[in-house]
Amino acid sequence: NAGVTQTPKFQVLKTGQSMTLQCAQDMNHEYMSWYRQDPGMGLRLIHYSVGAGITDQGEVPNGYNVSRSTTEDFPLRLLSAAPSQTSVYFCASSLGDRGYYGYTFGSGTRLTVV
Amino acid sequence: AQTVTQSQPEMSVQEAETVTLSCTYDTSENNYYLFWYKQPPSRQMILVIRQEAYKQQNATENRFSVNFQKAAKSFSLKISDSQLGDTAMYFCAFMTPTSGTYKYIFGTGTRLKVLA
Image 1 (cartoon, rainbow over the protein chains, first blue to last red):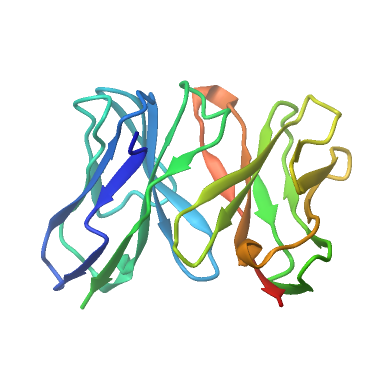
Image 2 (cartoon, rainbow over the protein chains, first blue to last red):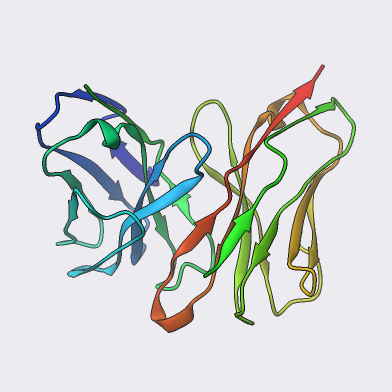
């Protein structure tokens, strides 16, 4: 049972490049989400999904796209990378459709935009 | 709007001692959930403990327990018999299922160092 798997673990992008951060979970969790973690700011929600085919915006969605074609996968796309998107990105999933039980997190992706 | 405040950016404790991390929150909701997460240097976020607001009894998980004061909107984490492996960032988080959304709000974290 792998839990939540994020790839890559590290990435360096040039300004204007695009890329996709991958997230997969094998626990049949309905709820998945993406957070970014910046120093002194805790974790901020980018996008979330309550099931396949259903996504919604979080607190800081600008510059990011998501889709949820399967229960297992929830990729995060950076459309045109900017230095302000330098951060650590976490994917998380939750049992049930309400997140009552707490999250299972991936190990994170450290992204640097130069 | 809901907010979560962790007023202690850094703390330290001697191995085997007890330490309490503070967390306060602000909400007008009556139905909500509170969590403490641990983030060790490996970066993986791990759920430590969970509290349901409608339950008066404080949650406990082995050496970890909470002091949940609903009226004061306080949710502190007590770590007993501290171990070197408890060295980590600790985040307090709040979630309410208002309006069918499930957005967590995280505090800014407390960095805990356990000293040998």
